[in-house]
Length: 250
Image 1 (cartoon, rainbow, N blue to C red):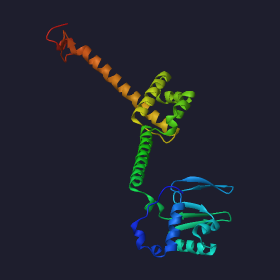
Image 2: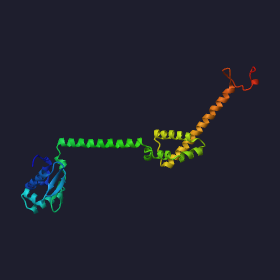
Image 3: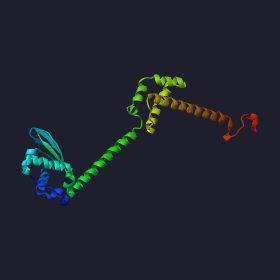
Image 4: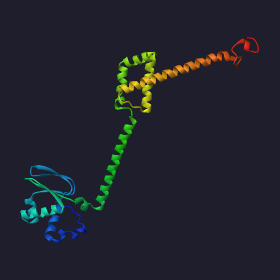
């Protein structure tokens, strides 16, 4: 085994410190534990170990401790009861996990690096969440409308636009032009619709108002021209409309 481990001064206040054999065995487990995630081959089986884990057998561990198998198992049971390790065993191997390995085996540099990695991971998560939020906000039109399914369905069949022209008593060409304006407007303001029925209803009401406004503007414009024809003489605006009302004859 290469490398080194940390040994905290708190160990002197622990019960394991006061028994030389137990202390030696505990240090042995710390030395045997993986200091980084690693895949190991144990017999014919490949095992993925994490930091602080040991893959071994009771027989091998007993030889390393210079003790019998019964004594080794008793010692491991004591460690489990003290919540110092967790153990999983089968007929081929025993995997031991040291409970607080990271707490005592991280030096200051490793602690700083680990903290920085956590901060970076948190920042990356925030960035990804922000991207999702921006994407959702920028596509406030429903998913179907983003894919132009509503629009394509209406444009592929003239039935709906023809019916709008009949209902509003207007030309189909005008309805198609207004439909293009309607599509541009809802994309601009980010209007969403529950389904295509809601979409069609919105377009019908929108088109009715547009045509009505155009009619009102046209009538107002024609009325203004009619008034101006009688109200203007020699460049001066007056209210007289009959020759008798002028100071002089026509």
